[in-house]
Structure formats: C-alpha cells, structure tokens
Length: 151
Image (cartoon, rainbow, N blue to C red; front, top):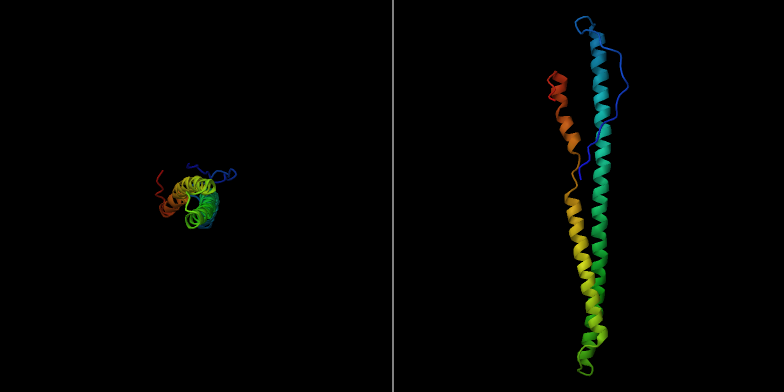
C-alpha cells in the first residue's frame, strides 16, 4: 500500500531574467531561494512519509499486542485444563471432567486467534517502507546543484 506524496506547491514566481544579464548577487539570491524551497519541500515530504510509516507500524504493533493478549489467555486456559486434569487423575481416577475439555477447546481457540494476529502483525510491519520517496529525491540534490538534474 504505497501512497505517492507530493510536496507542497510554491506560489508562482516572476519570470527569471536571462542569467547572462543578471548580476552575481541576483544569481546567488536565486540559488539561495531555490535551495531553500528544495529543502522545505524535502522536509514536507519526509514528514508525510514518516506519518504514513508510523501509522502502518502502529497497526502492526497493535496486532502483535493483541496476539500477546490472546497468548495470555492460552496460558490461562491451558493452566485451568491442567489443573482440572490433574485433579481428576489424582482424585477418583475418572476421565477428565467436561470442564477440563472445554478449557482445552477455549485455549485452542485463543491459540488460533493469537497465531492469526501475530501473522497479520508481522506482515504489516514488514510492509512498512520508511521514507522511499524522500531518500530518492534527496539523492538528486547534488546533481541538481551541479545543473545536471535527471528527470
């Protein structure tokens, strides 16, 4: 689920003069303004991508938290089943009571839920991309400063 981010658009600027007719101060001012605009756009892009990545990571972490919670119930119900089973074995020697079997069934249900949540959480965390567009556009800055920007 990759979303394309567009940096904020700058307001239109007056047409530039021919560089051959511009003074060094004017050229330096234009370069400074362009560099400042580029940096602001990169920061805006990084913020947008960071927000998107954090949301995906948060969803995955929430699912892993749910898996941990469900695992707690697995241990709880397995403990109850063992408790009932040992009580039946030590006591009268009869087979496990119905409550012991029902505790095992509930524990198996919680184990399935925990496994599904853990798998979904891991998958969601693996899909988290980081800042791919920001990394790509930052690599172009040195070439752009040299006047060799690639499209």
